[in-house]
Length: 229
Ligand SMILES: Nc1nc2c(ncn2[C@@H]2O[C@H](COP(=O)(O)OP(=O)(O)OP(=O)(O)O)[C@@H](O)[C@H]2O)c(=O)[nH]1
Image (cartoon, rainbow, N blue to C red; front, side, top):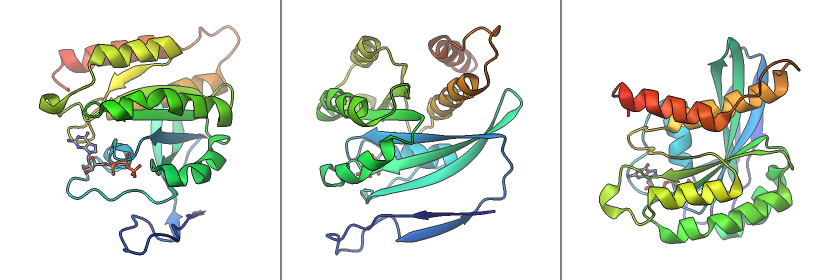
């Protein structure tokens, strides 16, 4: 099977630094049982592309920062409770000028990972504005998770973990700090989202509801206790 995604070109970009070409064809030979769309949102440079690349390829995109132009997606199939779950993950441009382009994609997303950078107070302060946009453009029952990225940059930290936790609690969304550089919590974030979506889609009436907050806390504890952080 082949999948094609048509990407949006930035007509104003003349310096050739775009991460993406106009069209990409990807051969998808992987079998899956169920598929979900997940979107990455947040200010420019918070690390959305790097988090996606870390999850998809297990690598870190260091070096010069190249801003995303428009929108792109990558697929990853993960095993969740004996089901093959395909996550189609949309990486959006954080820059303001692409906002109207990305709004068009909100409606299709079943989950949104909303990122800020723990070394940027501005990116954290903008989270409320992002949540307002989400409430305006996304599905009512969309799953939202807040991520404080660049957790490896302890010396430059300006947003406390407690501030992230407090904001997430206020909006009733799960929260964790991640690092695309070291990989901390990146897989856990996507797996928790995948589990929540899979449970929503397949849950039987007599089955207990999946508790994403409890799952995250138990897995965070597991990874810290076993030296996987
Ligand atoms: N130390 C560290 N640097 C990171 C991390 N994640 C991203 N970066 C760096 O931050 C810069 C921006 O990362 P991107 O992933 O391109 O940011 P983005 O959110 O996709 O930006 P836009 O495409 O403009 O929306 C790059 O220079 C990355 O190398 C991280 O977890 N730790």
